[in-house]
Length: 162
Image 1 (cartoon, rainbow, N blue to C red):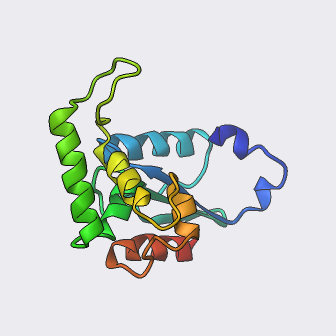
Image 2 (image 1 turned 90 degrees about the vertical axis):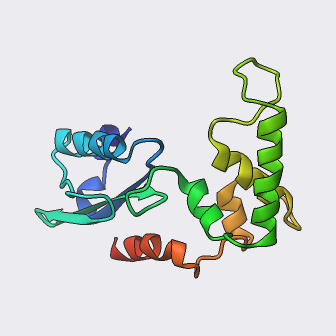
């Protein structure tokens, strides 16, 4: 989608942007895929995740969740903001119990925890809120994210740098 985005009217006026994506299981591979797309579309390409590069008046940054060159996803960052809280401990116990009793299966219609355990833990945490939702963006709007937590500082600084 990125090659199409940079061809949209008005994109030529953009002077600063960031690309944010889950690192998933391989930080290097995810970063390399983004670099490939940037280079193919003749855009500035930062040397490392979390950093920016400026060329021809355009500043570009890449941020991979959960940050600090760790594999994982946005959900891992959210869970990190809840470390050592009762709700996180209960979510860990609940999902751990489900993993033990309902192993993952690819068979449709069967119960079992996804291999992306952080997503399951986040949903169990969000189910324990006073106004349950199933999306992190909505949870953020409802105030369930602690944006002052140290786990968020690199992301906040990245967004400010854009």
